[in-house]
Amino acid sequence: MSRSIVLAGGGTTGHLSPLIATAQALIDLGDVRLTCVGTAKGLETSVIPAAGLELKLISADPLPRHLTLDLVKLPFRLISSVRQAGAVLERAQAQVVVGFGGYVSLPVYLAAWRRRLPIVMHEQNALPGLANKLMARRAAAVLVSFPGTPLPKATCVGLPVRPGVAALSGGGRDAARVGARAGFGLPPAGWVLLVSGGSQGARSINQAVVAARETLLAAGVSVLHVWGSANFPAGAAVIEGDGAKYVPLAYVNDMAQAYAAADLMVARAGAATVAETATVGLPCLFVPFPHGNGEQVRNAAPLVRAGAAEIIRDADLTPDILLSAVTRAMEAGNLSKMSAAAQSVMQPGAAGAVAEIVMSLAKGRP
Image (cartoon, rainbow, N blue to C red; front, side, top):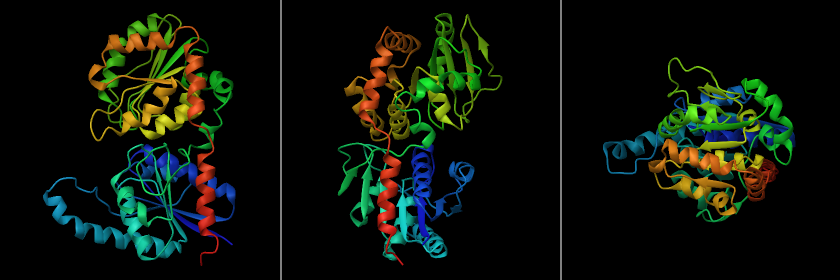
């Protein structure tokens, strides 16, 4: 008997990557009909269809955190969003709803709750988002990526990663290195530094790397620089060094290949980046997003404690600080120690664990 499951999440790759990984694990388990729910404002409009998944769009707005006119309008907008979400659930004949965060999740949760459908929520960050905080007590299962995430009834399962990322755990990254480097036009030998500020990019990281670029190339360190689509500069070009190369890209669709090509990464500390790099054993220099509630510092903390990563405050990120951290990480033996430590923190298998829980709730539902 086919099981109908609705998955909600969107906005950034941090919410979408675990959604897609779980969807793939559900498909592997058996006969399922999957419907994804997002908004027209997020990356899901391109990423979800590219993964071969059905996407339904609803209107949804972020929850205002201060007393503004938007807060006054919220009940009316939320009612409309819940009605739209309910229509999606009815058409899909949903048996279970799975939420991965983003402001699209709240109306889907509320629509499911009104219909007494089981809700499974997965929180990627060490500090939970508002929608998951509000609905956790009404969920059938509350799953988290990091131990100690402050949500009631929480079970730590890790963060679902796509099969291509999970395949790089153990010795997979070493085996895929040469082919991945060839795909990006990077030298087959020598160090490779991967730089990415997430799907939106990070100006401070981009500026520090550009200022340090010549010194890195002179030291034989190639740079695979993922700028972010909104920040990609006009006229950006490949630069050849003495046995090293600088390769700028606006966006990478398959980050598993970028991880395989690299020896070290400079990145924000979003939950997906932290979990994926730890799973594949890629040492990191994390530059947490300096605004918000400090969730990125907490995301990176387990890896820092294990000796798998280092944190650089955004305000402290200068070219000299960056070069010093890269040099320190690349000293003899350090990268291999950091890689082993990373994989001891985050084991693969979370996608399968989430899928099993979802399917267990779907069984027996009309």
